[in-house]
Amino acid sequence: MKMLFPVDSCEKIMIQDWPGALYKKDDTAFLCWTYSPEITYVLENTPSKIDDFEIIKMAESAELVE
Image (cartoon, rainbow, N blue to C red):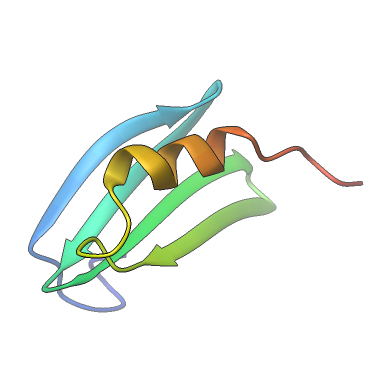
């Protein structure tokens, strides 16, 4: 993500068993996690409106749709 746009912070996390990261810039955050080399999920949110805990909980409820 740092190649696409500058970020203020990056926190590495796990979503289920998948590696991910929470990127933040000002009042915008991107929660990204990778299921496979072909599939990456991205959730954009506003941290001042949705806590990190809530967006991570939402991501953990995601299921692979084939």
